[in-house]
Image (cartoon, rainbow, N blue to C red; front, side, top):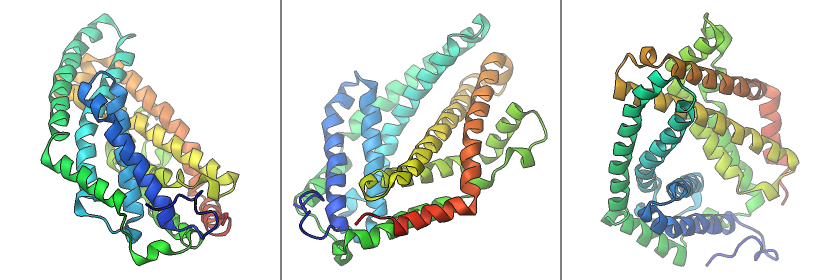
Length: 320
């Protein structure tokens, strides 16, 4: 078993020393949550298992150049497991979101939403059955066998033994570089809309929703990676990490509203905004407020100086 960074205090710390306990931690969480997911009594079990799968996938993807892993524990296989769980988690989020909106709506709109709520319950019952089947199927068992075998005898590429401090900036810069190239940073409310601000945000999200969702996924990948190394950089590293957590949350809120809108339209038809005017006003307001929270961060990271200083920090300020 590979030694942890703490156990390696007397020897140079390598990437292998960091990635092994990170992968092990997520895998232990995944298998520990299996029983609770199967029991389906605590909604958090599905959520936490999905989060651990996402973190595991991000780690394996980011560290791919140094890992020698079997196909059954690859990014594609982990993604398939995560997506099956994700369908249940998304429905749980929609149920909670609908409950929060529904409580203060006019009675006529609450009546319309009874059909949506019933459809959500029926759909979730179907998706949780798929999760239970997945946890017992051959592909998932192969995934666990591959993980156990690798953890018992971890295999790496030769570059895994390079001194940690000399290669960590390359790892972080690779993910950060892709994030900063995302066109979502340059989607501007003022330049693309000519109508009221709340309606303008709705219009932007209709046009650019997929791009913003892609930006969120890239932010999440960098966030998960950075969370592994807070002890290796100064305080301003954690300031950037806080920004990325906030972006992740902001666009998570917006994405939840977009998915709810799509689900309602599928259940009630294209005239849903006419049937549910108060609800759609509140969804638009929520998206607008989230967009307001996004704009200062967006503006900050559009500045060349911010990105330049962030990249210099990763290169120059690493604590070896």
